[in-house]
Image 1 (tube, helix red, strand yellow):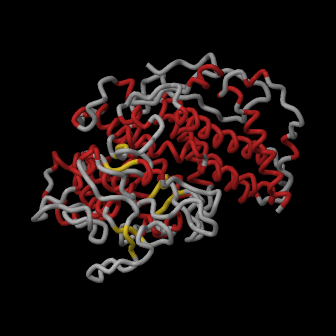
Image 2 (cartoon, one colour):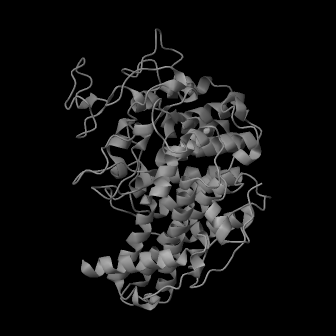
Length: 513
């Protein structure tokens, strides 16, 4: 155990020293007592410890916290009335500044993932763990390449013009570990970033572990890599391949141990153990957490509520019990959430018609009023964070439901309406929602917007897909973005500014247009 932690500490020191081109003037510091890379990995045990550390980086506060802030950018969420949220107004009004602390932490944490993945790849390729089998070494390299790809993709979607394959405004691509001395590097074109990402995913699809344990969906498999590939292809506008790859993921899912949850609530109750999760962070105990700041500081935006209304409901909708709303929204914001030990104000089960056994009254008030509504517990984050011996809230980076929407959107854009309807019916089933019965009635020319809205309702407040979709649809000419977010008046508001520290530490970086 002592050896394991010493390895992790050494690697974190290397990351800190190697990140010098992200921070201002840090290149003036001479590192002392620097551990030689050749001593970091010596056998299979130390190699596995280093790989686990790559996974751990996704729990970095900058990445987890950014999920909430970026949900404000789309209008999916808004600041809760009276809640203190540093710089939350800047995100909500789409006026984020290069000096923003969250932007800086997010940028840095993504590059931590990339750098540690690069270190592990290099050491494995140098055969620094000679007792590893060839198969396991290839699997570990594949896992690292997946993480490198996902981090580069995350950076591109946040800080680059990911929607324009001809743009020179991509991000800095790192396929080797940071040198001992800082080296300025220009951002790659969007096309070149995608090429790097797809190359990494090709290896991961072929070499990553084929199967993972059913209770360990915080690790990735070959199917996870294929799912990320489908997502990347969709953002590239490569709709034929996106439709094909997402369809493969859907068809192959059960063989890899993944399937949709029959009850929507169970995605979040089961957290990173959900059978629907393709990749989510492991969050347990005092130091390992996702983010329940969604509940503390934000609530739903008026657009999210509007598109979640049930048009067939007779009477006055009420979020007290989620009545009159699509249940995916009703679950997230009704007054009762899963009774999971500590996340309720009543401290016990509530008796209400016998239908809510195992649920407890939410902590927050029920006063409402459009975007001025008081914060109300978001039941997608049902666990109290930072409790010893307790499961925590995770960050859902990939789950199977998203593949159905990717397949449907790509199929529609390819003119394949019947396969699109098939995917939509599969994911819009009773227990999650009852819209499967309505899919056939949606005209072909309205099916794309139907898909976008349902994907928004399905995934809002998770991994910012509603924001990235809004940008994609707008740039493709399929959405009037100001009808959803009137504060967006210029295209430079569609991407985050590069952090001030990065610009100061790398004189080759171009400021976003």
